[in-house]
Image 1 (cartoon, rainbow, N blue to C red):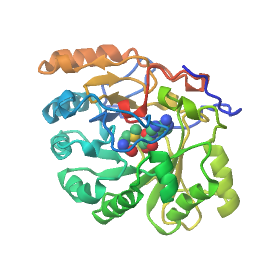
Image 2: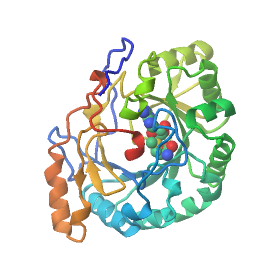
Image 3: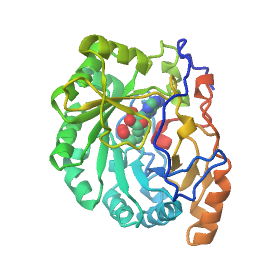
Image 4: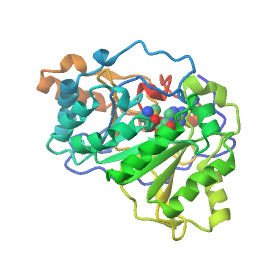
Length: 348
Ligand code: SAM
């Protein structure tokens, strides 16, 4: 485990997240109601983002090792019965799963599920935006760390920026609204690159969110550099555009505050797991592609649910039992990232 230098930024616990709904039976030992589930449908990815996984990453598992669409339906269905209201599909890259549309169709039918969203790197969106909307996806987040092709190649080790951008346009065209763009803040990000992402929001209805890079075992090579906090970026944006205004969140399930440059059509948001932690209001659980429950992104263990499929009483009892282990907060600022080797294991 590496010690992560956060460059003198002191974590502040001040970000309110929407509180869970009182109908949820999923309550942890700290009284937090859990209503949001992130579901990884695969570990596999077609990009190799340098903060996420190594260039030589290989994937020993295929779709058949992961839960089938019917198994996702059963597991997520049980969690929805118990109180989950919003689900986000993630990965790996969820759109490399051949049966992704069947997974979406099955989850869409779950009574009680209010919102079904997807995080993607966008490379398959030109082909899949329409079918995903028809299958029941409400909204997409697209990861795009730069609008510069060369820099995109340096970060993702692939040349797919043009495809990703066509994917963003396709998502907007078919009405997957709002489209959010996620950019991980890297220590060596050219500030002008970040400026261009902010400028996108001036004329277009996009929600651009900046995420502080979280340390994991596979990005130790990036951890020695000077940490870029969202506070640094916000100061830069405000120096260029004036004070950011509060904006109505386009759709809020998580910890990003919605802001806008005065007069802009789109919004800007900051996700600050290191500089301003938001664990106190955590409302989320995670399910891995192999059917394990993860209680905190940075926890040091997971709980297998797959062996309990077919026995709904046992499945519910196990979920209720393990909830007691959900930690009060992560220990990232102390350099402890649990057993998380890479975000591709669980999808952020
Ligand atoms: N492939 C999909 C995508 O690109 O959105 C879903 C999986 S990806 C792991 C989910 C999100 O986690 C992306 O926005 C990615 O940029 C972010 N991410 C990956 N590693 C990260 C890290 N070390 N710190 C912060 N965010 C990270």
